[in-house]
Image (cartoon, rainbow, N blue to C red; front, side):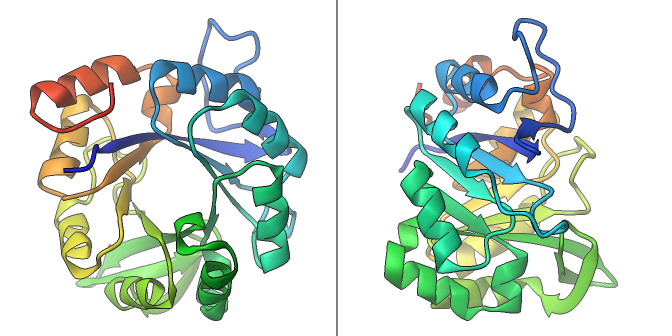
Length: 251
């Protein structure tokens, strides 16, 4: 069985991390490069940077930041936000990103997935999906959860895989920020439907939630932000806990 991955997510705005990062031991908790280096040192398996201004305010992800982060990191990192063309992706990969995450742009232009997969390889293409469960149905949302699409989550995930996505990053909007655990039933269903890795996002609150999403949710990786940023969960102790539950992790 492949090792399960632990992935801190950094929301970046104007080149700085936002959404509450509380590290007293860092000179500047808003500095994405310093945080990236810290997480790598702690044993994170990968990092995700989301430029949260990008899609909504039509800004391009900051290439300069990617270059700086790439110099500091020895683990894979993914960059997302405002990526809508193969040119955007080429620039980011050249700057040192290992993968790109596409969300709204993939729904608006599904062929972008196949275009990126054929040009750069599926392993570089992460399709991020934000969905909300309401009235008995999981619906896909765009623009950081601001725009309902009417598209069914399961239909879209199957389509993304068919078009060449290398991974799916699924965020449950119902669970995000609640710290009550991940959407494990839905994650398990997604994992059974597709042959590509599923990254669970939304709902991490304690170490047990990570174990649950790997066992019950059949997730390949788990992503979280605030529990790491506020040191509510430290990655070394999380990994030791998972190992004690016989969940394969890279120590």
